[in-house]
Length: 80
Image (cartoon, rainbow, N blue to C red; front, side, top):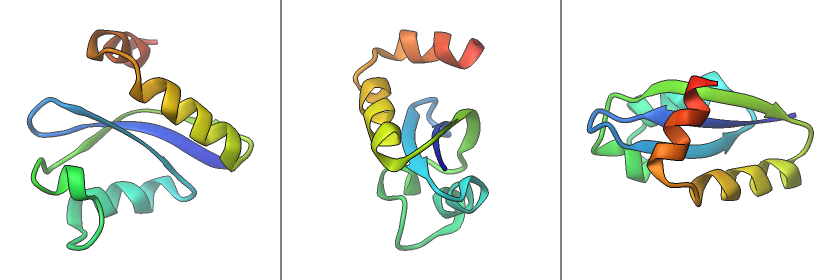
């Protein structure tokens, strides 16, 4: 099982990713010195949306789809 998730960064941007262990990944975004390149300068981040996906292939496909959406569409997804 994998998670596809979105976090809201301190600058109001949205970051989409996949994780096997969601809570650990969010901690990486907020505290890691070597991981989370995009979010490192935009801390703290807050989890705003997540869903579970059966396997890695499906998770990668969904992540790719979400990353291609305009921010307005991502905001609507968060509200659902």
